[in-house]
Length: 317
Image 1 (cartoon, rainbow, N blue to C red):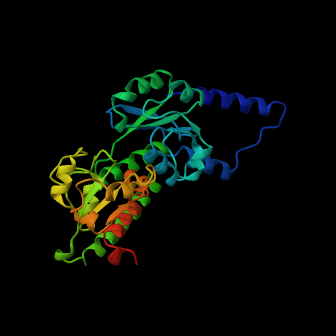
Image 2 (cartoon, rainbow, N blue to C red):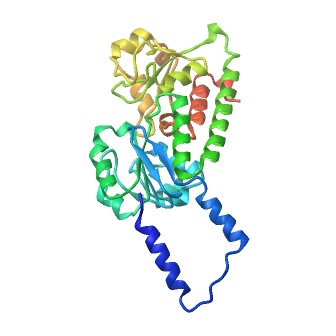
Image 3 (cartoon, helix red, strand yellow):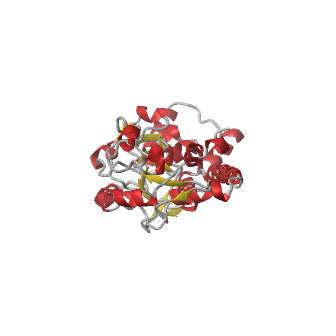
């Protein structure tokens, strides 16, 4: 989509040149201009199936999900970000950015930031459809990034954002580094003997939502040689206390400890859980929710934190 930025830029250049002798472009200027415009315009297809034509490398970006934000920063475009979601916490620089709301973002606020690219997220679903349409009607390029259910789909998110922002090479490099990090974890996990494999219940929140098969977390469990007690469930199910007690996990991982006071004690004192191995052996452990819940550049770090919690003798060295 064409923006008023182009017209304003031309006008500014003409005004600046009034009364001045025109300067011939140098070889260095020509090369810089070529680098800045290389690869554009591009047509990118978002997770919603919509094709988005991006005419030039975005200079003002709004991201609507923490995973998008972290990817954009990792690709070296932190300065181009002008707005982030209310849920963004990393890197620290996000605190200097304008906040534009959560799942139901503030359309007027986003428009006021005059972005030339908005990175929405497929996980928002119907809650964001109207807002996305309003932004597009306002002449703003909106690219919906896929909700990654697997590590491979996370790599696709990197590639999609890289393509849209002119940082495809950087995205490729980041994907290679993540693959190497996961491979290193898998290699360490290969030393775990079958009789030493531990079972885990991953508690997303106190209402017992968890990760089943078909999720990137289950993929991580398999990669680090952990038995997911709820691998017979699909997606992100809510299970009963009876189901957890019956599965009798060796370790319970809490993905919300930093947000709930005394989370570990809350599990250790649950009525009827006394005979669960994880409770008996006090193997109830908090993991960092941000790095284990966001399918972005820190997910390998999140996988390592899970591995260290379950197998400290193998991974925490």
